[in-house]
Length: 455
Image (cartoon, rainbow, N blue to C red; front, side, top):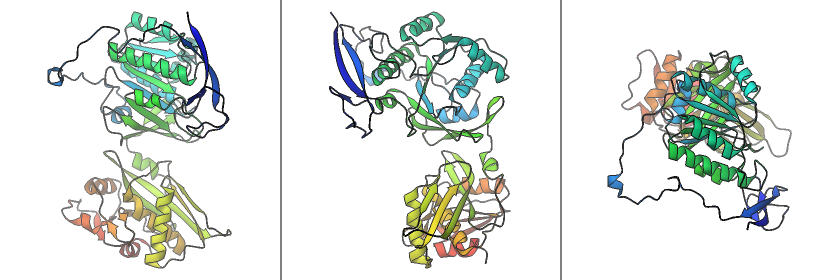
């Protein structure tokens, strides 16, 4: 006979407790403990082999033949996935509401179905008619793909066995419920159990599976943290809903690099790839304005030129404000301390605001020199040279340190028509740069400021 047991689970991190608590000990969130009913039964969970007994074998005898990746024909998505969709992989896609997760996966379904792949799109949020209306809005010829509006996991599995798809899309995991778990859909127990069963189906049948995950107000995937450990890849769809550009970023990928990003532009007929993001990010760059600098940053294997802006103004507070968008706040504070100590700039009574145009986040040390140049330019109110690209890492003594992949950065600057590139002196040795671009090496921050800032 089944035994019912009550427990309280945190809806943010999955922490479980036998009694209700106002503050979760796991993530320190308030009022997130929700009562859940669990059932103790004799139900036996099947493993990844579908309940069949398998013997352990030596690793040397395991066949290492790789299944060919499935080309989604969406170059930016292929780049983030590591070259295409791996059969049998389980991929979690997260992002803010309205950012375009469902649109991206629907366009991916179209592309795969047009190539002959059998695709099953399961939606727990929309009816089949709503999906058809959205497909018509995208303006694409409707391919022969299967659509199912269902959130009962047992019924979904029956349809999977019936259709036998190559690709499965679940939109979203928070709406799917397992009948054996006596708690509401979207709860920690339901999300954990549903993901575990989908993982078993994906691995056992070799189905490439995408699952959509809702995010919390902090921007992380809703549900237990274990959810991200269970899947093969975690993709975040980032961007402002009021901005047309979207960035697809991999924070976990067992089949590729986590440094790659894909850039899309939201239009009336869905998402379109941005082939050259540098041109997009620099399209509205002002000329002859103090505090504006162009930096060449590496996003995985792709060099991206981005405008970095800074505004320094006298403060009206006892403690000056330091705000940074797109770069690390602590890094900006350290660079300002170096400018005060090594260059004699009195920034202790100045508010400083640093922003990366276009909504991109730069997290590599090679952008240090551009941050310093932007802050110094705004503080002195002298414009930078608009034809310069600045690259380099700054040490605490004011020296400019070398960076990696300098040739790719210089060639990207040359391709977009820039005349000069200021780089660390260490990177000059062995550099093969195009003939019609001037490369200047600097050893400290003072030399860089003298080269870039006018006046």
